[in-house]
Length: 200
Length: 200
DNA sequence: GTCTATATGCCGATAGAC
DNA sequence: GTCTATCGGCATATAGAC
Image 1 (cartoon, helix red, strand yellow):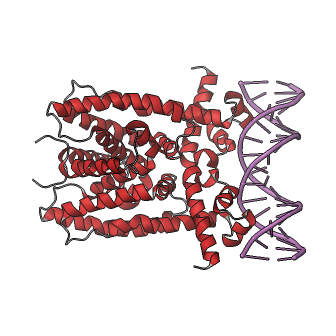
Image 2: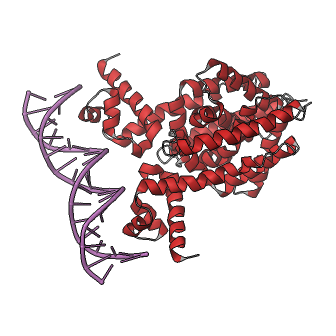
Image 3: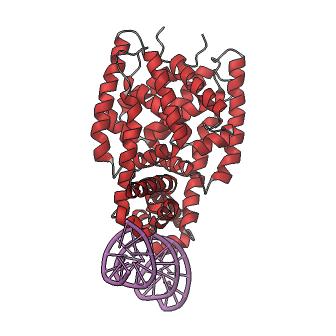
C-alpha cells in the first residue's frame, strides 16, 4: 500500500470515529487531523473540504452495512437464514459500532447527504428480499408475517446493541464485547424473534 | 398560562424540533429563535446559554420517555401487558418522533450531558421491571427468555419507526402517520415478538 | 422584558514558500 | 506533499439603552 493510500485510510478512520461520536457539526477538522496524526492543511490536500470527507466515510459504510442482507436467498432454510442474519448483524454491532452509529445518525437526520444514494439501492435490495421472505411464507416455511416488519425488527434489535450501547451498559452492565453477553444476546434474539414469548 | 411561560414553552418546542434534526452543534441559536418567533437576545433572557437550553429539553424528554415502562406491574397478564406496551411505544414514535430521535442521538453520543441523570433512574426502573418479567416467567405465564433482552427488543423495534423513519419510508413507502400502516406495524410487532416467526 | 450594537473566539479554508 | 501564516465568516454571548 502506497504511503498516500495509508494516509487517506488513516484520515477516513479517524473521521469515522470522530463523526460517529460528535456528529458532522460537532467534529472539527483539527480533531480528525490530530487523531489521524496529520496536519490540518495536509488533510485538506487529501479531501478538499469537510463535507467531501464526511460523504466519503458514509459511502464506504453504506456498502458494508448492506452486505449481510444480500446473503438472503430463496434456497436457504428460512429459520437458519434468519439465525445467520442475526448473528452477522450482531457481529457487525460488536465489531463496527462506530459505523452503526454514524449510519443511524445520518438516517435519523433525514440522510441529507446520502438520501439519493441510499434510497434506490436500498429500496431495490429490500424489495428483492421481501419477495424471498414472502415465498418462504407461501411455502409454509415461515409463519405469516408482514415481511417488511420482519426486516425492520431484525435491523432494529441487532443495531440496538451498538447504537444504544451506553444505555445497554447502564441497564445490563455489559456490552457485546463481553463474549458471554454476546452469546446470551444472540440466543435471546433468536428465541424472541423465531419462537416468540408466548408460553406453550 | 402566563406570557413568559408560553414563551419558554415555545422556545423549548422549537429547540426540540431543531436539535432533533440537526443535533446540538448543528443547530444555531438563531435557528431556534426564528422558529420560536423570538429574538436571539430575548432567547438568552430565558435560557442563559445554549447548553442549558439543550439540557432542559432533554430533561423534559427523559420523563416522557420512561413513563410507559412504569406501567408494567406483576398483577397484569403478561401477554396483554406486552401488547399494551408495544402500542403505547408505537404511539410515542408516531406522536413524538422528535423526542424519540433526540433521545436516540444523545444516548448514541454517549449521553455526555445526561448520563448521570439517566443512569441511576433508568437502572433502578429497569431492575424493577426485570423482576416483574422474571416472576411472570417463573409462573409459567411467559416463555423463558432473558428479561433484559426482551426489554431491549421492545424498545428497539418500536423506536425504529421514529428514528429510522426516512429509511422506513424509503423501503415501505409509508410512515406511522398512515393509520393503515400503523395498524399493520402494531399487529406485525405483536405477532413477531409474542408468537415468533417459526411456523406451527 | 425586549431591543440594537458589538465583543470574542473558533473553525473551515486558502495563500504561498519549500 | 507538507509546512507556516492568515483570512473571513459565523455563532455564542454580552453591554447597555429603553
